[in-house]
Image 1: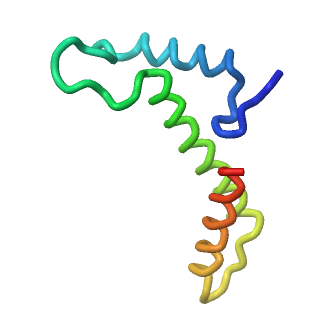
Image 2: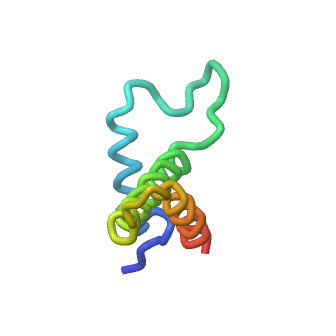
Length: 89
């Protein structure tokens, strides 16, 4: 089973999630009227998963490596920079 680093989900899990999101929408994702959406439903759900997965990784890293001090903001910035490189890699 292959998990995608960016979402933390397998292809099957991602497809199931998109299907479920589509079921609970009040209106169709792609309406015939109005301004078209920038992303299709699949890509929008994928983007949300990437964001949530990244936040989860950063939260775990913060809890594991944070040092409580007066300069904790510097530690937070360091973690964000390292995390961005980790997620992009």
